[in-house]
Length: 302
Image (cartoon, rainbow, N blue to C red):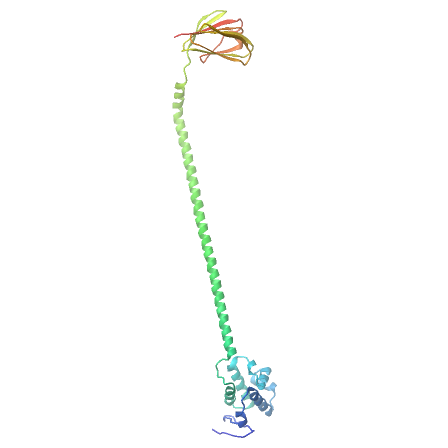
């Protein structure tokens, strides 16, 4: 290896490792940037041409020459790439420039704190996305659970309504059948009930005319006792009443008046206007011709 030691001077040779006393004494980034700027100007290369040749933006070239490497994008890997392109454009040994930068900054290709912070921020963003996804998943699960509960409630409610409707139909059918059976039973029992009713109706006692004339009528009542009902209908009527040969009363009754008379053996009634009365004797209605007053006698007989 060819080593040139030229105090205060520097030498550039392509393919030859560059060792210059002044270059080796550079210890800060500001001195490092100033060295690069001086080398560019010594070669008569403008920043505009550097931007065109290296594809590095003008402001980043200025930052490199100012020693402000913190504004360069992409972290240390991109910074080393910028330095290689810069050294190549002005004819310096790329490796020497890179090694000098590493020596000054004592950095290797590990990402700086800013990059670490960017990585941390990226990880936090990923965690946030994961948390959001988990939250969305949790919400979806909760929504799914409520939806499932709602569906179950709908199914149970439908079954309940169906069962209730079925029971109502069964009850309705049972009631209809019961009514039909009752109607059939009623139709079957109606003749029997009518027959029993006819049998249970009391038999009217027989009443016979024993004697009659223009002024008197005698009836024979075949019953245990004599029960008479007199009702004035069309006009006033005077009556005299004796039961079992004992005088009871005499009076004039008006339309609407009713008199009940009971005797054990005999009932004697003198009627002034027979045509104005309705006369019932032991549930038998009797007709007495009107006109003249009459003595009506009812006697109990066997």
